[in-house]
Image 1 (tube, one colour):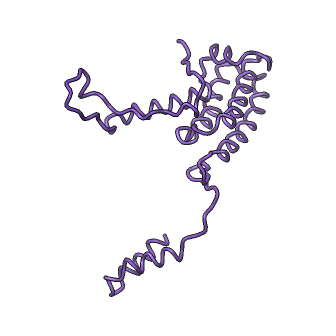
Image 2: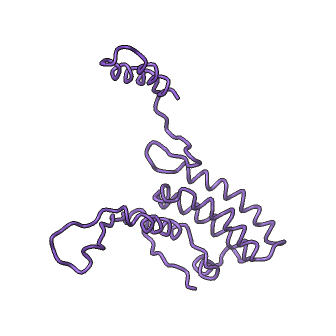
Length: 197
């Protein structure tokens, strides 16, 4: 809004040669001080892209939901609890995950603990029940798998827009080859397994 007002003021002025300079000068006068974090479309973005604020925000939401699951697990059947899980828990976990899923494993482990707790509450398993078994039995993806799936889905959707490999060699897949960006091993160090159907 500020840019439009300044631009219309500069554009309507008679001095067109000096208009760009005036526009930049007025923009600099209206720039606010630097902020440490900002909430944009429901995702907290901090100045260092560590995503700690976003992880804390999702953790707070999931803690409230986990209490509700504790009460509902005695009332509802498993099929309805699964519907609620996908609607309430997984929707919070996957919203913007392609951006904040590369947060540190320490902060993501806290989210994963809450996810495990909710699943164990849903299926009435003890707290000491192995987490790998609960994921395999329920065919529900953990947080790291959800992140990998969201990255793969994005890559698949944008495969036509990715840059092609250009070279003069006559290879078998010359026309289909794309440049795949390398993933950092420090971000996700665990193996991904997909549930068996």
